[in-house]
Image (cartoon, rainbow, N blue to C red):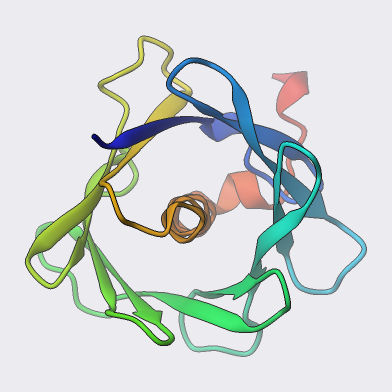
Length: 172
């Protein structure tokens, strides 16, 4: 049985904290946006505040790159947008000590799949929710849920640069 999580996309910006909820609406993971650093950083915590992972923008790269580290600061994965992506968006996730992930679909519309080779490991979609600013991440059994959720959040930040700069959305 896969697990489904809910993320409100307008909350994802540096300097903001937000919660990732499970299918029942329970706050499962907190994402803490750190503003005191030169690089954009998001820290993933469990509901009790224990650090599980962090996403950090990699500076001085040719294309958008974000790194996911584990709780001890060891690199788990590096996410990059593919240079050539005909017809659909494509991102690569180089996973340290594991099989790499391939992300394809309509990233801007939050309708895409995450695969290991040819096997789907997760799906991101807005179709499960009636709220236009909410999307879901459905993760297949046996997967590293924190890694998959961090990949989805990092790609959302890279694909929607106006949100990651922490614009004042409340003024709208």
